[in-house]
Amino acid sequence: MSQKIVIEDKSVDYVPENERHGKSRSLFTLWFCTNIAPLAVVTGAISTQTFHLNIASAFTAIIAGHLFGGLFLALTSAQGPRIGIPQMVQSRAQFGRYGSLLVIAFTTVIYLGFFISNITLSGNVINNVLPEIPLTHATIIGAFAATLIGIIGYRFIHRINKIGAWVMGGALVAGLYVMFSQPLPADFWQRGSFSLNGWFATFSICAVWQISFSPYTSDYSRYLPAEVGVFRPFICTWLGACSGTILAFLFGVIAVNRVGGEIEAMAAVRQASGFLGPTLMVLFLLNIICHNSMNLYGTVLSLLTAVQTFRPAWLPGAKVRVIVSAIVLVGGIWVSVAAAANFVSFFLNLIWALIGVLIPWCVINLLDFYVVKKQNYDIDSIFSADGGRYGLVNKPALFIYFGGVLIQIPFVENAFFTGPYAHVVPGADISWGISMIVTGVSYLLVNNKLQRPLTATGEQQRVQ
Image (cartoon, rainbow, N blue to C red):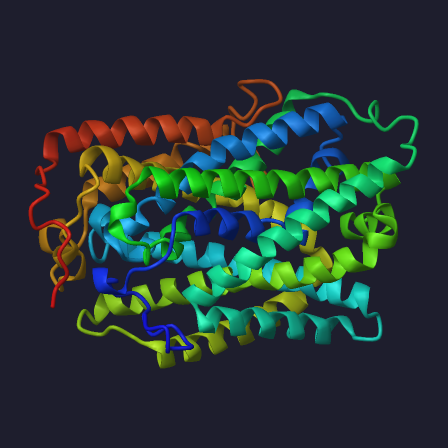
């Protein structure tokens, strides 16, 4: 991507070495900044407002959940410099050219869910800061701004988050100082109690928050030079994502407990942070717009990957990305306006639903890349019309994937369904953990028998 090009000219194609640029540390600022958003603050507050945990229990569940889930996010992010293609295109190596469409469909729904949730929240923040702007108009403004950043693309997203990391990190630290500089409510530390159900529910939400980014993490590392290796992108992503999200989640917990009652989380932030409140609202607004540009970017890449699956010779450029972005924008605004009144419950239910489809995909992806294929993919085959060595449909992988989803059903408990063994461990939902173990063991056993070894020679080649 040339320095002179304002709008990114690539979409789903391979990034050759002569177009690679950047440092691994940019992944720290990207994932740190993008997670300091109102959505993270609101979700963190759920731990005490919905699950009624005390402060200490909420803190430990949030920290543990993000540190665990962040491992998956960071491991997928580290794949980008090695393979130089978007995450969903890479899924063809695990599921086959057409087989990957199922995963792409699920991922697109996930991106759209986060995009819609975030433009709803950005509209609320704009309306909170400037009440004279109607909520619907505010939602449209936030959506348009996020779409513009997403259209410009990769380089601009990284640059804006480099600045935002310092601004948002400093703002939240200042906000915490203000909150703790005044006397706390007498029952601040004693309010709520520990419960295994509430703790594990919070842990799971935090873990899946991180895992939910996995289908597009390499989209933001694929331009890095291959020589940066795996460890540096991994550690920079893990530290950035975990520290930024933990800070935002804890900020929400402290704010709602500082104010007390059932107050909405962002209103609590504005009240608890005193004179910094209006400034924080503006900064949160800017950050959520930047954050949501990544959801838009990922949605568009997923949709283009799906279409390109049926048109192997087609490698869409900037113009196509702009058109598809506009379509996603209009659809997202329409759904957001309709669902705004039930935003928190909608997002919470979405998070639980994500566990079922993301866990087996993520396990298969990571085991295939790091254990089975030893970090070596045949890029020619990934773009080949017949799927090359990966074929059109990898039935064993899809069977294992479906098994990883279905094995959860007897143990799952969410807003839609309660399985017959949901309480085999009292107060805890263990369905996603069972899926992780069953999927991992099954995939390794099957590939131990079927996998043809790949050699490093000629692996990282691109069809010219």
